[in-house]
Amino acid sequence: MSDLPEETIETVFILQLRLLKIVNTATKSAFTIFEQFGETTETVPELDELQNIKERATSYYTRLYRILLQVFESQPTIPSATLDVLVQSIAQIQAIADACEASNREIQRNWNLL
Image (cartoon, rainbow, N blue to C red; front, side):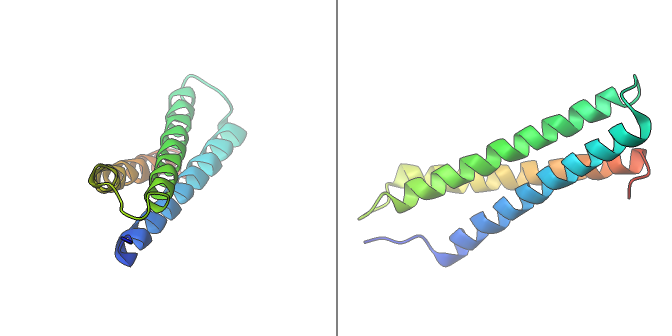
């Protein structure tokens, strides 16, 4: 039997938590902007960007969930291709999470939500 290192599992869970927080922040920001300023030519691009952030974070959260589940269902040995996908996904999603968090902060600053 081969098991995934605890550190890798923790990394996935921490990354999933980050993605959930990104979804939450984008949702709250979009709601606040819409409630305070309405849907105007100035707010629509920001609201669209927040929707995009939510969709990306949700998609990557689901991707991590599926890959991790696939790894644990791959006993007695985890195929190297599956591990490669997991490692590549972790690196890619960490970068995407950083970008989404930065976009969230920028939009919040633009609308004085910080």
